[in-house]
Length: 296
Image (cartoon, rainbow, N blue to C red; front, side, top):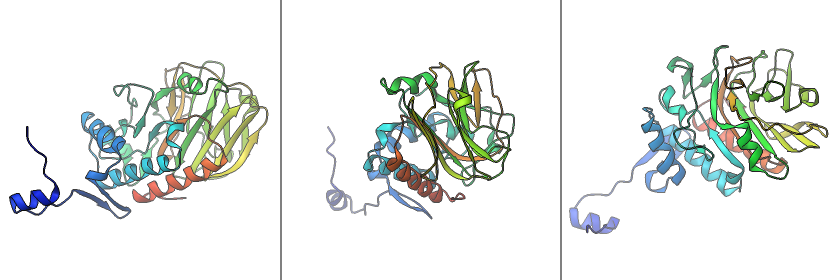
């Protein structure tokens, strides 16, 4: 059995200088030996398995974000997190957090390399949708008492346009997050469109998060601050369809109104209260800054 040498033993025995692998970018550094295990041991191998690749910036970004989520006790509230990082469209099929589904259930893409740049994000075409690796029924089941859930998206471009950010449609009811629509409104529906939260919000950018907490409590947060609420959101839906990204998934058959905006990533999980939302916003902003993207 081969004995593992300490750094000092290695230098004495071989005469060589031990140089740790360091990933560096304008936003910081990360050492291979100190990477968050979910990044170094799970996300990086998944990217390679999907014929994608990563950059130093993507490693630094994702390592920092996961560590920040854990240090602020937010990791357990998030079951899916994708920061749209790496080289090539296949790289973004590997979500950084993918708790609910096996690793083979990655984001289904109709996007191509021309739609993605790590320095910019994923840009919608007005025709394409991305299916996340989470079903609305998965989110419904996380909180067995209130069925709370969260949709979050980082929006990089500020145009008002008719195109959803994320959500699901089950044939009669919608759950969606819709940032700065063509009328200059941002909305969050938890299943009953007539009871959605609807707020004036022209040309919105940055991190948006809709949090359904109970049948009498739902909120929208913009850049970490609450700016919409409802005491009558009604019950959410338990639909067995994938949550759509850059659009709303219509019963796994395609999109409803595909977006043309550029997105820096998305997340979903259980409901998250105001203190956590402010921290989430800071984490997302720092992550996007590490990647060199537009930060709001």
